[in-house]
Length: 81
Image (cartoon, rainbow, N blue to C red; front, side):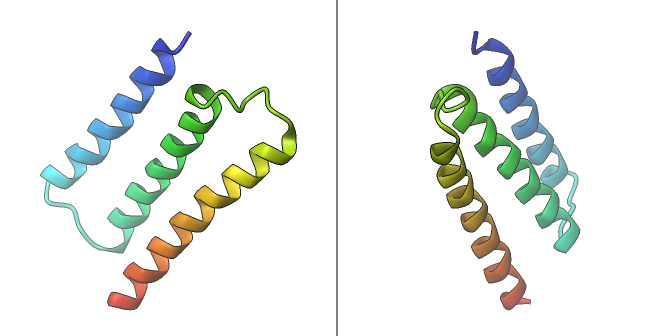
């Protein structure tokens, strides 16, 4: 059943949105948003792409891609400042 993961994804999205509407900014805020993006991405990989029951190698490949994207975004943000 995808209802619980979907609701959790909405909660994480509203959490990030709520922080931004409160005027938070800076490195800590960006790290929080990227951490929630990582959690959301992993949840999408597990539940909606149905890789939770896939062979471990596929899960590792997709998760490493997600982590790489987050690292690149973090590096680009850090280089900007």
